[in-house]
Image (cartoon, rainbow, N blue to C red):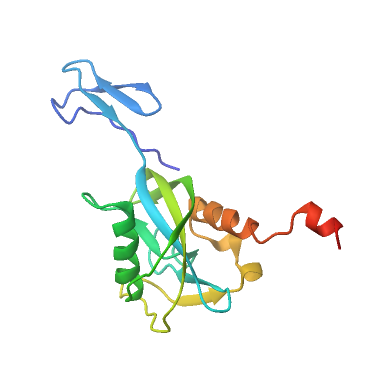
Length: 179
């Protein structure tokens, strides 16, 4: 797995020194370069049967793995706006209300660079039958909560968000002992 590693100062082009896991410092001009995670979003979209919509990735990274709709937050864009934009771009409809589920750290290996990511997972009910994928996305499929192929989920941060959501449906030990 390749790591992102900065070698040269973007201000004066001299060699950088790694001072901590997320800080690079230029001894020549004093510039500080922080390696921060890229914010992403993923949306758990449930239909009227409680099934969750997944997209089979058509391109790398993680080609042929299942993923939730979502993507990267653009510059000058709020997290909320990025959720609405990604759903419109990927599935062709405007998302209604959505609520926060969790945030999880991950990595995104793309063209030899292993980016740090922070994925914000949301939940929304799917109120339309007009769902289609864009030309850059793969096929769609609904999975029942207990049939999700967790071993084939594209990204660990998406998997963690799903697991957090799915854990809310598991019965507590107290509830089981009452039966």
